[in-house]
Amino acid sequence: QVQLVESGGGLVQPGGSLRLSCTASGTFVSINAMGWYRQAPGKERELVASISSGDWPNYADSVKGRSTISRDNAKNTVYLEMNSLKGEDTAVYYCNAHVKVRTLLSRIYWGQGTQVTVSS
Image (cartoon, rainbow, N blue to C red; front, side):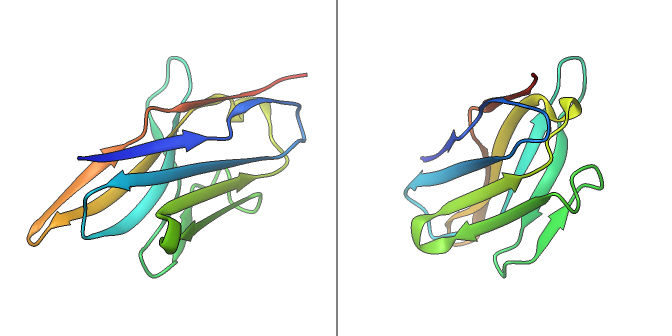
């Protein structure tokens, strides 16, 4: 079984910054792509950013230029730094990982979510 545990959410003032972390634990062969999604009330879950096993990042247009996704493969951890936060960034942020559980078997896992609220 693989678990993803997020941390770093909370209340942030507009214009502020935050750093989210997500660590994978359990038994697996390797982790391929990792990413962050978010879901605001009444809206569908959307991709925020993802990063491949080769460290190639991909960003949603809404966060491009003010966000950085990175990973530490030795720690099985993915990070998301966001700057110049806006009210529309308020959402529950979910970590996602494509995990090679064993030979010829890969699965997608999700974290439990961490609330980010941008408000003064």
